[in-house]
Length: 340
Image (cartoon, rainbow, N blue to C red; front, side):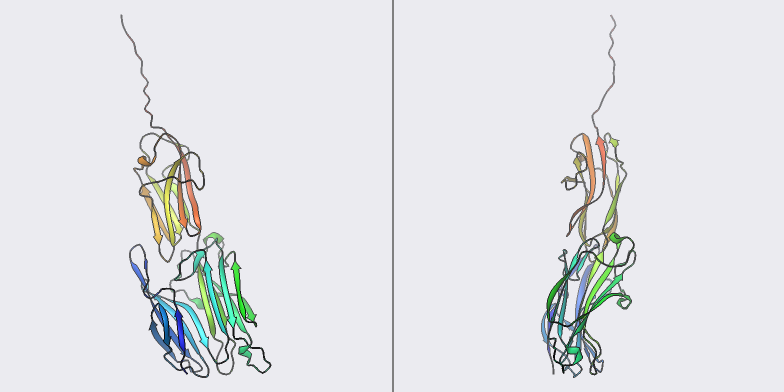
């Protein structure tokens, strides 16, 4: 028989993501793999909709894989997989975080994420086939390495962290306060966690993936301000300042600001002209900015603070700060004498 497959794809086929130099596009396809023959058939699909499967479903069932192909650089992503069989249970996996980005779930190394799983169609009769009574729930982790972005990552090298047998129908939410991507500096790990449901093997079909989703973990940003030092006295011309930022979150706005007084986290100051940096990408970014001629942002003499801050879906974070004293008062030393 043939089967209608509903495609719930997170606006990938026609959605563009703006990067610094290029427009990135995604193309979607459904791959149908027949069992036990292993015959595969690829069909391009729209961003959302319903269509008839291209091949009849054999007695061994079929696996439907949702792939997204990124244009620049050319990268393939397996977004989801569903196995359809006569008595195989139905399972779903959905991952969410505080970042609303919908193409591929993502979060920062210091933030939590949530995994919603649902299982239906499990049987419990004494004569029911073994694959109809339970399934496996797996959690894999994989590091992208220092500076890695996950481009063309070999997911067969991921580490299996946990494996659980599920034998009851229902839904539940799993909360992960911290990720488990390998790395000595927990604030700087980059990689992914993948959660999958697998059916059990029997004489008609091998063990098959019922559902799977992964979330990308990106490092916490850091930065520095150079060219001006704490306690420095500035007389007339503000010195040239170099702002260095590393691992800016893919959805972030970063800038330097100045305000009167001592450092005060959360203070809203005046943005230093030329210091704003907007990242709207699929991977983190590192930049170096040089700013000068910002005297107009320093309204009056006194003690000042310059902060380097970044705003992400998780809030506002200070990356670096420096305090200095501004004194533009001109003082003259002179004497006055007369002769009579």
